[in-house]
Amino acid sequence: MKKLTHFHHIVPKHMGGTDDPSNLIELTVEEHANAHKKLWEEHGRWQDEFAWKLLDGQIHKEERNRQLSSLANKGNKYRLGKFHTEESKQKNALSNSKKWRITDPLGNEFIVTNLFNFCRENNLQQASMWRVSVGKQKFHKKWKCKVYV
Image (cartoon, rainbow, N blue to C red; front, side, top):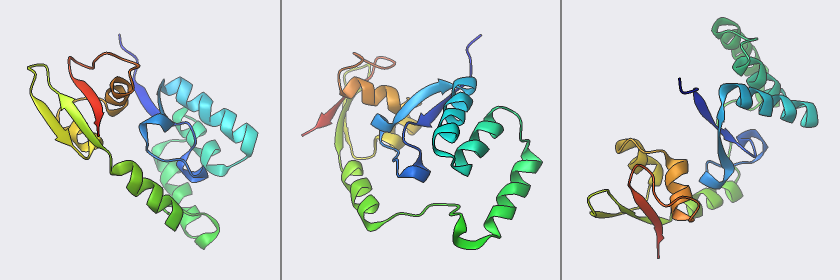
């Protein structure tokens, strides 16, 4: 039986990390919980403690919703939702401006600007396609991918 996996941000988004594939790693739920536990022990950020306990089953859905509601009522002390500096917006724009040459199993080529959406529409994993594009894998589900120059 295949274990359920998650994508974990190596540098968490609440610490300035991005959704760039180079910042993502596929982990089992247990590994994901342990990664957040280590981050919490090292940095003491509530987001990592919360993620660790939620993934570990120590916090259930009702408790999660109550805690998030409580944090939202504390105002700007905790930033829930997305907050981007101008610098992070520019970095995201640059990383999202790449073009990708994707070849399907039949040899048809596509030039795309949004790898995430393309992968979602074609039932592919973005991280695997990125690994193909940098030469860490030869193909993913017989699809090939390269950065288009």
